[in-house]
Length: 322
Image (cartoon, rainbow, N blue to C red; front, side, top):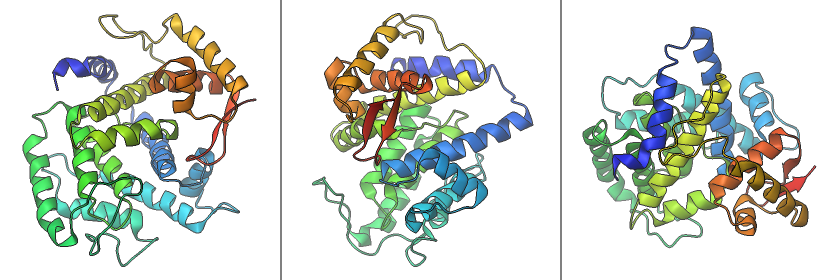
């Protein structure tokens, strides 16, 4: 893709770079903040029932949550351990197969010790997809090729494009018995961190668009790369807000965060939720004629104002007026 496709991400990256070096206490606080955020969102995309606040209690206080499956707790603690491991992977050398295996072992060992940190030995299938995944005997060669591709393209491609392709290529190999989606997102964020960028958080309300663009990426990855770029931008803007910085940027093909149309969109979304309670972001986007990305921005404003809330499981819940 053309570098101009990542113009907005580049501008926000420069604004964040201008704030560095961050104080030690700030770095620690941000790392803990995204430890909870990434763990919650990545698990929620796969149907984990823990809320963000419950995820925080599990991984920071070591407590279980009454009425929640033990597996959901293990997924949270395991993902947090894998996230911590990302920061120990050296930026001075290419990512190795052993490090990918260790990431999976940390995430999956409490769930299935025998298959944790090992390439799968049986065929697997993706529910809702006709994609034929590689046979187990092909995995060692495919993963060796994947790691070689990473080493050969890191630093040559734009960091966002590289991270998106790392995700797409890995998940199409599907080398583990389970946890491939979460591993793909961990590796995507590892690629961003190694390039000095922020992580990219994919919230549950983007699940439909995420799956749809990833599913089409085998023919052309462009839509998926744009999706990841949008998620990087939204995470960058969140970081700038946390740091008390303005997110308004030059209007050369880039939307201003305080655009006048935002208030109109927020009001339209609230009316749509009032008339159609329990709908998801992609459904609400159709109702008001906006993109899912825009609806996500409006949702955040309404939630911050205490006007709406999400009820139900991540896969089948929806938004309601408070």
